Image 1: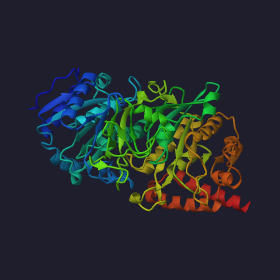
Image 2: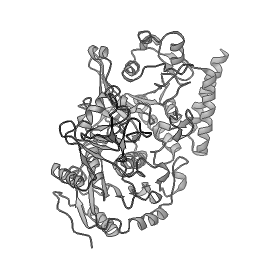
Image 3: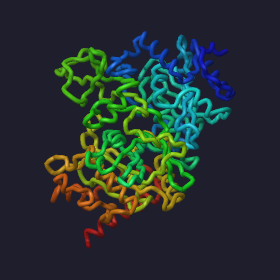
Image 4: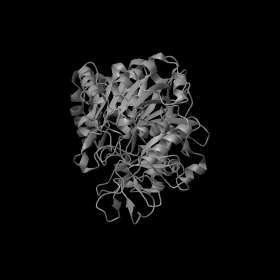
Length: 600
């Protein structure tokens, strides 16, 4: 028998959903079952309860109205890739870039952990909608959790409650998610995905990326499998709309690995001279994009999320003013520093550091302390609607037409500031061969290359080579209507280790060139690697980038690129006979073009 249900305003008659909830309750044995309706009264009550038990600390109501501060357990501060599993029926379908576990064996293990794990707790049934209401791209998920902190964050990150149940109706195609904090035992921490069952089970973590199951777990890992099977794309991409002085809008989706400027680009403020001329950048989404062919034959994109789960350190009014304004109100801050006046601080914020604070562990901190005040992965969860640059198009049910796809990595050498792929298949190869240099000793040797195809390495829910095959198939289906593909690198340095490109707001120069390329309004130089802009078309002289600096920023070093092709060959060998021949041929063609240009 299921435990009694706590009162809620939810209206629901879906028998499949009710039966599944009863099944999970019988296993986990909570004291109460509560169906979340997503109302303001509900979240006010939950937050008040978390304040009473110390889970949340309310922030200053004038400086941070509606905001709360939270700390996670010291052993639970980030995604855990080594504890994340794809439980596909066949091991070969998970591929060499995922951890695989046999579904039956994983179910047996997780059942032991889940057995009675919610005793004495409330089990929250959390319906949520990914994507705009009434959108053909939208999907419904149900997360069952024993964490009110998860409920509070999911209410910001998704369209949660009655709206999702209304969208679902009597259908049984909802994505299932079971989450329990359990005992926060890292040795028994599992984030397990069962693509054949549309199911995620996450235990022993309360960190966002492991516990907010609508985010990476559903919106990327499971959705990538659904997208493959149904003929669309689930991508780790921002979406922006760029309005030019004529009023024309061009929409760009962009994929970047971590520490490569993704959030800053999603909320870019153009330089004053561009704003005065009539250029504008609007935010559709900052992290995830679902792309599906529209009635016009083009790929259309939606942001399936409803909020931002942003990294705090390094975010400031100087680097990303729109992010700072987004999280001023109605935000949950996790693992940043707490000041005595109940405001927050983190490394990289504007102005001098405070004379003292309480760090993310709750210890007294001063600028002389040997450890940072905010955890490097500390976060803010803020409603996307609060972003000053949010687009009026961001909740269009049909999505926005994607004109260009942009890849980018952090490379101090070899890769030029920007280049355009020759065509979609070449662009797929460009994305598949994306690399970034590691930036911290904890990640390995500083400067060492990390392959991160399409920025999806930790998030693709099936064999990466089959994922590339799906990209190629989408291109064949879309033909000439597919988006143009570009690659950028904001991080080139000269031989003295100085940055060649100013970045941040000046990245608008590259976006303007891409817009003009998409609409056939500017020329480019054909090189062995792709189509590269002329220096004058980026206004490099205006930035004082001339001569050798301009050549390094936009040039193609044949010897370095030949070594690049060899590095890519070594990476692609991991995928053996599953590698699409088109990827192999594109790398061979790149090598051929490099040889021919050397001999010319």
